Length: 193
Picture 1: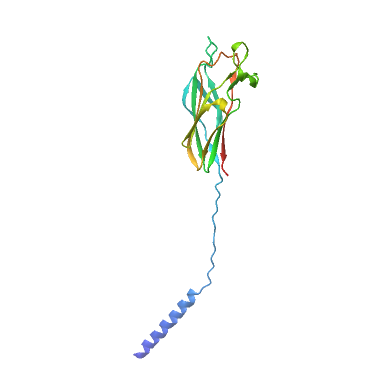
Picture 2: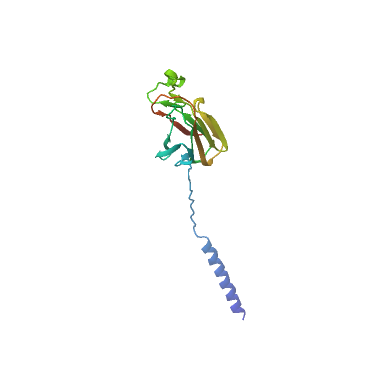
């Protein structure tokens, strides 16, 4: 009876040696890296009107359009009538940035009038009207007259939300020379470097 036990022990030793050789197979490994880049950007979405009095907005591009004042002057006095409009722009900026609000003329200038018209036209008629601008973004607000230069808001971190822009023309600024009055407001986002 000793013999089967010895045979069994030899078989077990043979199996253990074969298992050890099976674990010593050549193993190859590799590594795959996944890389991505999120470039810094600010994206302005399509604006919408949240409030308007004597004014309307017509879109002319993804983030641009025209504000039309329905009754710019009183037909009896030729003086300006009050108007206001508030536009809301959805914004996503994934880095720190600043936003600047700039009026090209510093106010509404009559087409064909010289920039000096801001100082007043002849016979007591004006050719230039300043208006009030208010910009809300990143928990900050800038409120100033269009002729006071650029309005600036700086955001030290990424932001996502709505930028609010309100434009208000005053009543009684006139009388004005007949014609079309306009200005261009530029909203510019600049990424911090």
